[in-house]
Image (cartoon, rainbow, N blue to C red):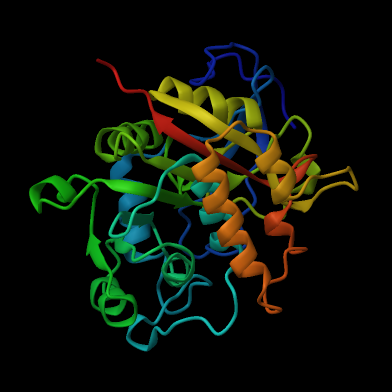
Length: 320
C-alpha cells in the first residue's frame, strides 16, 4: 500500500482521510486492458472504497455492452439456450423472503430484477410470490426474448420505461450484486431512479459484496469488474443520502470468521410487524420448509458477524 492520497475526498462521508494505492486485482480481462491502470482508494472513516482514476459512464457502459458477456468471458450467457434452473437459487430465495417481511404483497404485483443474469430470481419469485408480474431491467442482446420465453417476463432497458409503457410500479425490486458495477455517480443516479419508480408501499432489496478495505484487504480474490467497494457504514450512508429509509441492513452469506450468526427466524423477531405480515411470512416459511429440497442451513439464509456480502431492505422516503 502506498502513502495516503491527500487529493481524494470520500464522496460518501466527505472525509479527507482517504488512503490510496491499493492494488486493483484483475484476473479476467487482462487482454482488454480496461482495468490495467486502476488502483483503489478507501475512506479511513466510513470504509467506502472506489477505483481510480474514475471511469466515465460511457466507458463503463461500453464495457458491459461489448465485453462483459462475450464468448470468452466468465460471465458469458447463451440466452438462446436459457432454461429454468434445476436447483434452488438460494441467494434470490433468501432475498425475496427477507423483502416480504416489509411489504404487503398482493396477487398481480410487480417484481423487478435489475440485472437478473440467468433470471433465477424469476424462478424463485414464481415459487414464493402469489401470481407475480415479472420484469427484468437488462439491455444484453437476446435477454428480452429469453426471459419472455422461459418466465413470461417483460424486459426494459431502464426503469423509466415503466412509465412510458404504463407498467405498474414495482412492489419488490431486487438489485443483487449490481451496485458495485457502477461508478459512484452512476450508483447515485440509479438509486435516485429506483426511488422515483418504486411503489410507495414497495421495497428495495439490495445486495453487494462486503469489501471494507480497512479490514478485508487480504480477503479479496479479485476486484474486476467492480468499481465500488462497500463497508456496512458506507452503504448505509449512500442509501440514506439517496432518499431511502433503511428497514434492514446486515452482512450475510459465507462467514469470514466463525462468529455467531442468526437465522431468518431470529431476523423476524428483531422487527415489529403486523399480525397479517407475520402470518404471511410464517405461511411461506412453513410451505418452503415442508420441502426437503430446501436447505435453510445454506449460508445465504444466515446473517450477522463478518460475512462476505451486505444485504439491505429499504423504502423510498415519501416527501409530501
